[in-house]
Image (cartoon, rainbow, N blue to C red; front, side, top):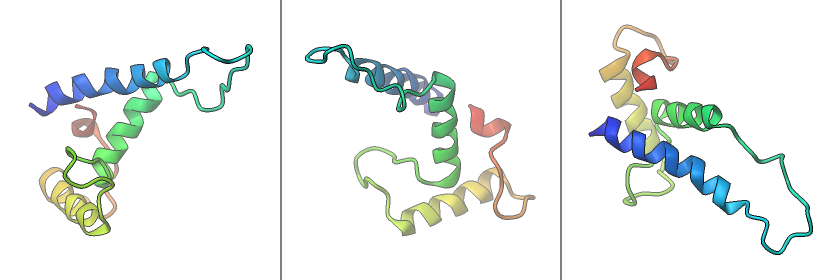
Length: 95
């Protein structure tokens, strides 16, 4: 389920920025400073899920500090039981 959700979320994030930067009403000006590659978006998503700042649904956005800490602890216990704090993203986070 998480994999399917992630596979739907990544293209949605990538296409949202593409459509949001349409040229209607502009005179040939383009701000390229905010463009990110798909790889950058994927990496940001991986890091957000890893560090507990990834929002799950609309229940709490943005997540509170207590929620972030709880998610970090849950993630560390489930995925990084033998690592010290802070654990770094690794292969399981890339899924």
